[in-house]
Length: 311
Image 1 (spheres, rainbow, N blue to C red):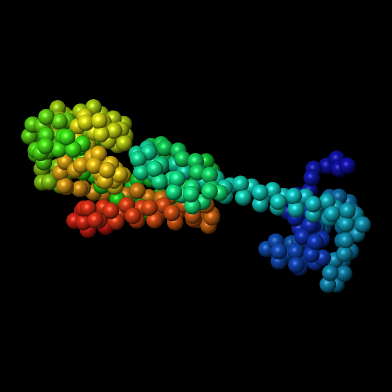
Image 2: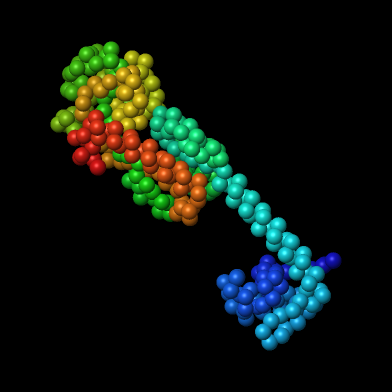
């Protein structure tokens, strides 16, 4: 039993390849190095063990008895390692972990994920919703859906659809919201959603002034919560006609005004450049881009002027 440190992995790898292939030159080709480098590592291993591992011949090498013993065990160890790597890769490819913004994940993605699972039942999907921009190189998540300009170093980014917003309300409140295009006109229903989005929307109508604080109802932390309040009849919400297309199609929400305004940002599918050849990421990318294309087409159909202007 050795009472000294285990030889270096580089030396063991060089020995195992040379023993298996019967040639330092072939081992060098397999390992992406030179035959001289393989020979050097083998000699270092022989010096450390005090055992001659190969008989050197002009065009080949031959294992000694001691070398043959070690080669057998090294071969088993490397085969076990290769098998464990393959099993780990197979296990990883069967689990897709993604993180996304709360409203996108809750209102748009979650209702569609069953379609992906039906197409690819061998891939288990784990979804996290968070405002935080998670570090995709840390290994916790495979994919993220982010909102912004798509410029994030080290990440592959694919545009899904733009951020758009418009006033939406339940049908019963549309008449009460008839004067919503004037930011100073009195309304009997409050405004819901981000004040900065309302300001952008009013500027698109040609108004410089912002709605006064008195026009706003309860403030919520996320767009899907604002929409939930609007669905309950608590006001007119400024929200995305893409993310809440289902509510519009079902008639649960109607436009309080037909002006749709781009936020100057988009939703993006992102993942590390180093993972771009992953099978599971490729399958999810193909599926999600198809769903996003359908969402864009719906916006073009109902709001062609807006989409012609925003791309």
